[in-house]
Image (cartoon, rainbow over all chains, first blue to last red):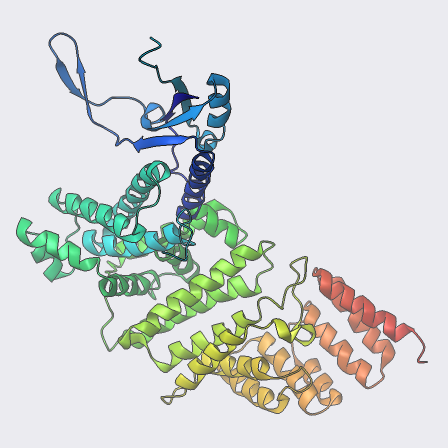
Length: 114
Length: 422
C-alpha cells in the first residue's frame, strides 16, 4: 500500500440553500466514513482561504494566493491505495465535482525509495 | 449525541440555524441591513462546510456556528457597518471595544435568540407588507429557505418570489420598519397578521396539490415551529395563539392518512383513522383546552374546535355532526367563505337529514366548479334515491377533480348507482 494525497481545489457551495448545503456535506461525511471503514483514510486538513505568498530572493511577501475562487485549495486528505489507478478511482467518489470542484491525486514519495 | 450517528447532522440543522443566526445578526446590524446580515450567515455556513466536510462534525455544531457568527458580527461592528436604526442600548454597547463583545455574546444565548426571532417574526409579518411578501420574507429569513425552495413550494417561479421579497424590502425601507417588539397597544394588531401568515403557511403545506409530499410536510412543520415560538414567549402566549397551534396539531395528525400512494388527497370520510397520529391529537387537545381562557373566540378557536370533533371521533358515522354544524354556523358569521358554507351544509346534511343538506347546498353560490360540492350533492341525492340527479352531480365532480383517489371513488359510486339492487 502506498500513500496518496487528494488535494481539493474549488467547489463552491455558496449558491446552494442551507438545506442543500447540509445535504452536500452529508455526502462528504458518507465518503469519509467509507474511506475510514476500508482503512484507507490516514489524515486530512482543511485550509482557510487567504494567507500570504513569499516569492523571490528578496522574499517579497504578498497577500494571497490570488487564485480565483475556483482554484483555491480548500484542503487535503492522505489515504492509502494499491497504486495510482486505485487512488484515482477512490478520488472519483469526492462529492465536489457537481459544484465545479477539482481533485488532484498525488503519490506521497517514500524516502527510502527515492 | 450518544444516540445519534456521529456522521449525521440533526435534520434541517443548517436551515434552522441560519434562520436563528439571521435574526440575531439582523438585530446587531439593523433590519435596514438585512442583506448584510444574510451575507454574514452565508459566510458562516460556508466556513462550516469547508471545515466540517474535511474535519468532520464538531462536538457542538450550533455553538461552532455561533462562534464564527459572533466573530463576523464583531468585525461588522468594528467596521461601522451597523445601521443607526438599532436598539439604543445595543448601539451604546457597540461603541466601546470593552462592551461590544459581551453584548454580542449575550445575544447568542438561547432566550435572546428566541427574542430576536420573535422580533424578526413581527418585522416579516408587519401589517404594511402584503401577505404574500410576508410569507416569502418569513420563509427566507426566519426559516432559512432559499428563493428557489420558496418558489418550488408555491409552485411558482423564482422571479415571482424575488419580486415579493423586493416588495417586502421596499416596505421595510420606506416605512422604516424596525426589529422591535410591538407596544402593548399595537401588539394584538401585529400578532393577528403574524398568526394569519402562519396559518397561510400551514394551509399552503396542508392543502396544496404539490406533488412533493416532503415540501408540504416542511411547510407545515415550519408553521408549527413559528407558532411554538410564540407560545414559548409569555407576551405572545395568548389563547388565540394556542387555538391556532391546536388547529395545526389536529390537522397535522392526519397527514399520514390523508394521502394515497399517488399523493392524492383522501377525504376525511375514507381515511384510515388508525393512521392518525395520537400523540399529536393529544397535543391538540391540550392546546385547545388551554385556548379556552379569555373571552375572545377567534376563527382559529372555531376551526380548532371543529378539527377536534373530527380528531376525537371514533368513526366518520359517530362524529358529533350537531356540534360541528353549530361551530360552522358561528364560523360563517366571522369568516365569509363558500368553503365554510359547504362544510356547514354537509354537517347539516349529516346531523339533520339529506334533504336539509341538499337545500343548504343549493343555496351556496360560487362553488359550481368545486368537485367536493358536487360529490356531497351526489351523496345526499343518492341517500334519498334520486339516482339520476345523483349521477349527474357525481359526473360533474368527476370532471372537476384531478385527484386519482377521488376519481376512483366517484367512478365506484357511479357504477354502484348503475347496477340494479340485488
